Amino acid sequence: MLGGNKKLIYKKAVLKQLYFNAGISCAEISQRINRSIPLTTRILDELKNEKLVLEVGPGSTGLGRKPKTYALQENSFFVVSVVTDQFNTRIYLVSNQNKKVAEAQFEWTTGNGEETLVLFSQRVEELISDSEIDKSIILGVGIAVSGAFDSTNALSFLFQGKFERGGSQFLSRQLQLPVFIDSISSLVALAEFKFGKVAGHHNTMVLNLSWDIGLGMIMNGEIFRGHKGYAGEFSHLPLFDNNKLCTCGKTGCLDTEASVLILMEKIREGIQSGRNSILSNDFDPSDPERAFELIVHAALHGDQFVIELIAEAGYQIGRGVAILIHLLNPELIILSGKGSAIGKFWITSIQYAINRLCIPAIAEDVRMEVSQMNYNAEIIGAAALVMEKIDSTSFDQYPIKLIKPTPIHA
Ligand SMILES: [Zn+2]
Image (cartoon, rainbow, N blue to C red; front, top):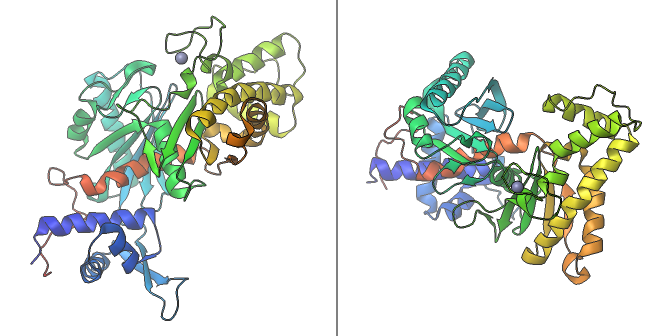
């Protein structure tokens, strides 16, 4: 006889496998969760009866009779995915197939004060209520935060220090849901590793080309977060002696010459000083989302000035990438995040810097690719964070009724 708690642990482990690997067989699940095939079969049968899992057909490989394969029943459960950066906090309700089913914005005004966290919780509750999805089938909240982030203590600093000590626990109590927080760049890397172009590549650098330039590192098949989770502060590599103040308080960081925000500022200055561009004189970086859309449009329509400035920024990013290649010997570099919409312009200039600055024998096998996930990488990454933690999360204290812990015979 298996106790309810043990069975619950196995069920969560199976759901996690099926979220990250849709269409795998019972034998593959059994191997991945390190449990016997008969036990895995029983867990799968029960999850099928509970309408959480379904058979999706026979496997496409193997000799003889092909095994049945399984996937999550679409819309049988959801997670809340939150992406919060310098300008926006976007809240999404995401299905177990990573599809956005509802979204909202929240203006994160001042820091981590309880008042702000209460307002944020209310916005999340409103989104859930407006969606008419039963809250008891929402497994948790994943929050992607920009800026330096201590993932061991869930603390952020820079950009209003959104999470101070105890912030995630406070939100958990407010929302009555498990809440997990991590840096946007690590979560973009997680999304790319599990669902994007990185799959199967165990030593990969994922550049998150966003308002700043983030880095998620996959080393030996795992997200590398460093001693306290601060690994990947690529934006703040001290590459310049330019006396320009960075958001981190230092001068000369990569961010001071190559971030999307700096690119916008350089475009504005250039146009005002007479450079010709299809962007008009009233190009205004103070609405960064709109300004970025205009830059993407201009670049894709061949605007010489904009493409020149992207190439200059790309070269500086490439100087940082050359350091990464020498230090870490990656096999793949992925350009992800919102900036990947103009990835083909970055990639040539970053490659030029690699060719110019790297020892050929070290750099010759490094491939670089542009992600197809674009904005979605951060949203999927925050959702995947909840699912990555599902097997180590106790739902006892939350009103989540999704997975039933009744005993079964072993
Ligand atoms: Zn800095």
